[in-house]
Image (cartoon, rainbow, N blue to C red; front, side, top):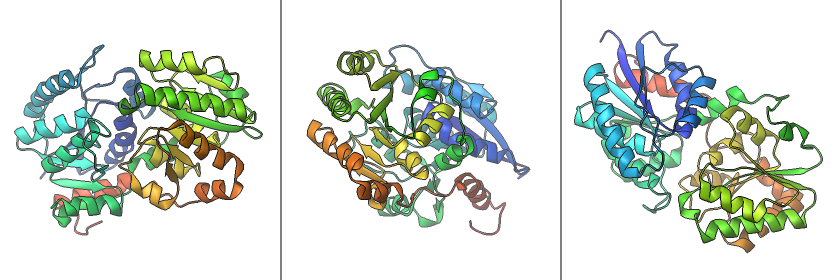
Length: 378
């Protein structure tokens, strides 16, 4: 083998954040020819991350269109990737996590009899409709993959239970920690002046994200109402909510929380300012998956507004607490951390189960070992 030809496929902002340090790490190895294919399942948010990490894609399928359905994405990505794979003939395709791009990229590679490596493999919530469609995407990708890069022991055990051969699983940690630690700066200055004017030392700043499909409708209405009441009842609190671009979410957020003085509804942030905002927060209130991995690395407690998580390691480690979507439960969970110093410190100082910032290196070394270019298993 002259060089190991590795094609990395991703299409959303979360994938880009987690794949970027891996792409950059592969550039350091002379044994690897790295090819990057973007599907642009998301467009603007993806481009921001690619630019931040100085990634030069070889292919950009640009599939995003307004109002696209999961079926639209699936069909366009499958056909677009097929053409790229036929042309490039990589030794292996790397996909990440659980998006439609992930599953379809793996399927396209399978159709061409090309090996698939699944980065962030083995996460499971136990409910195929939550998160939807991500939970099924990750299960299907497991069945298509030849090599599995599991962030944690728990992810490894999930794969073993499903019959994956242990010799094809490598525990690496999560590449998001690599990305996060590379962009957080002690004296970061935001472009958004409002964020520079927040008194992070004397206020208890809650950074909030809320966008999951399962929470649309009544659950999200209850979430926003509970946050407004918390802000009204706790004057030392400042809530910063970068509001998702979905017009229904934006409309609901403005109608319920828009007139509350200590709630700041701002535009979505690029990855670098968002990571630095997390670093300045007192606690995180979210329904996101990825933040459950990132915030613990910064010593920030995370309260998750979902009924289950595919990242149970964080809950078991004590860095994350699942509080559901009921109004009273959300208020109780937040008030506990606002008022009980012991409970706050217990979460803030818990050990992050997602690694030390060297996941990308372990992943590349595992790839080289798998293809016989390294003699020792990492």
